Image 1 (cartoon, helix red, strand yellow):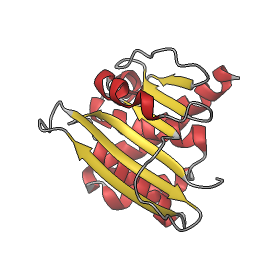
Image 2 (cartoon, helix red, strand yellow; image 1 turned 120 degrees about the horizontal axis):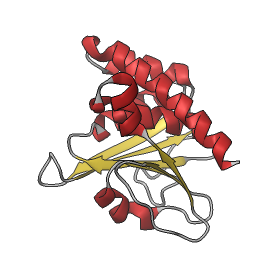
Image 3 (cartoon, helix red, strand yellow; image 1 turned 45 degrees about the horizontal axis):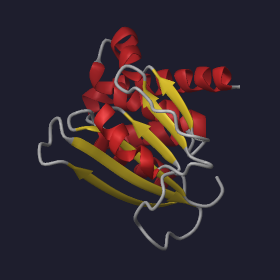
Image 4 (cartoon, one colour; image 1 turned 90 degrees about the horizontal axis):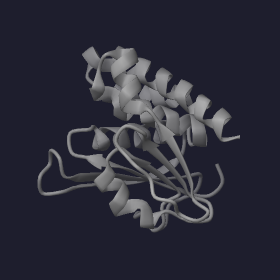
Length: 185
């Protein structure tokens, strides 16, 4: 990873967006990176737009807020609409849940769909881990951190009874990320 990566994970309250941001941040710290994070959610916690901003860097982070998004992970239409204008048009990447987001054409911007919610329901019989599925896919597609670091963060940051399910979600996400990469070539 060169320089700082500014990631915005967004969706609606109740999708596990904040947890996804915490997992990514903690995984990055355990991988030896500098990390800054900030979470926001609308007045209606369940259903309102929710965002987790994470900056990951090999060097000290001077300004701890996202200025221009390098990677946007979108899990709802309203969050996508609100944040699409914040993405770096030249080098940015948008990763979105194909079941929940319809994209707009933005000149020069790479946008890749991941069937995170659909796959979580079909393959894991649990819609609640779609956040971890798309996080796994984004991690595979961007090489922000290793899969091992992500799994370790899950083991430390998720309730014990949900650890195995979330690790399966990471595996599924990495598989979907590899498939998306091969299709995009």
